[in-house]
Image 1 (cartoon, rainbow, N blue to C red):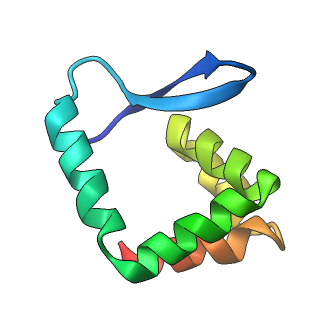
Image 2: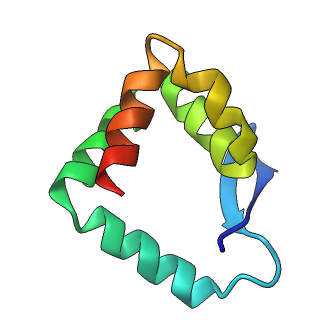
Length: 86
């Protein structure tokens, strides 16, 4: 199971694996996901929108947050699209 921690870095957030998670496995999994052109397009779309980008970062740090964003008009469709690919 993956667990994630967010650390503040230059007024933004960087998501890093929590202690106990194999960094090499996490990087490999991320690379595999981003090798999928559909997932890469969704990620690019999410990164272009600050509201969506912040919501995704929050959800990575706190998976319980997904519920609140799924009903958001801007964020929900992107989260559902990403979920359908994974």
